[in-house]
Image 1 (tube, helix red, strand yellow):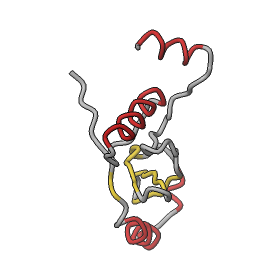
Image 2 (cartoon, rainbow, N blue to C red; image 1 turned 30 degrees about the horizontal axis):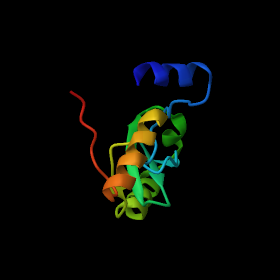
Image 3 (cartoon, rainbow, N blue to C red; image 1 turned 90 degrees about the vertical axis):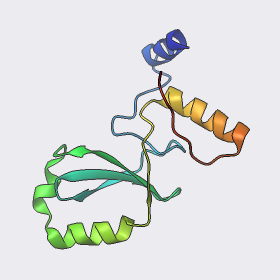
Image 4 (tube, rainbow, N blue to C red; image 1 turned 90 degrees about the horizontal axis):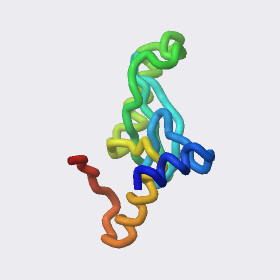
Length: 108
């Protein structure tokens, strides 16, 4: 499988999700809470942390905006994002076969 993944990357059929993606494959959009950047998927009502101080626009925001962002996305489920499109194929296959909405990948 590793060789297939490398081949698909090399020929450009799949590209990495630089800031993660929802399990459905949606890369979403981001919002800030202070210097922390969160991405979210409106369709699945999920959110995932992408990092801190990656984008400078948080400096142009204030506490009021951050509190509004917290309030708007507080009910979104926090997930561990999918960072590899090839992994997403397996996620969707396992979701289809098991009927489960979410699960955690563990690496040995």
